[in-house]
Length: 43
Image (tube, rainbow, N blue to C red; front, side, top):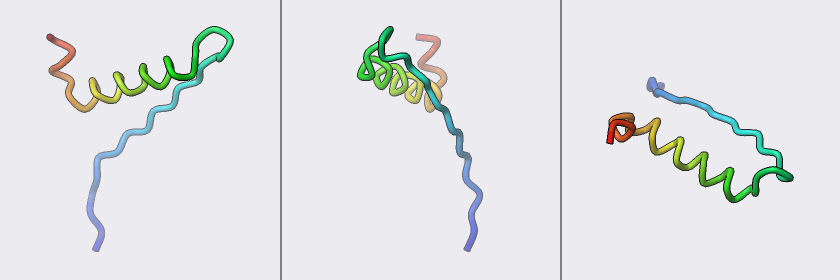
């Protein structure tokens, strides 16, 4: 059985000489939280 799903893909490209990969991962996690709960952007 097929079901409809709402899916979004986001990709980040980070220059490791300018930003640490861990910082980029934290930024992408914060982006994911805000996209999944947009009302949090108002707080």
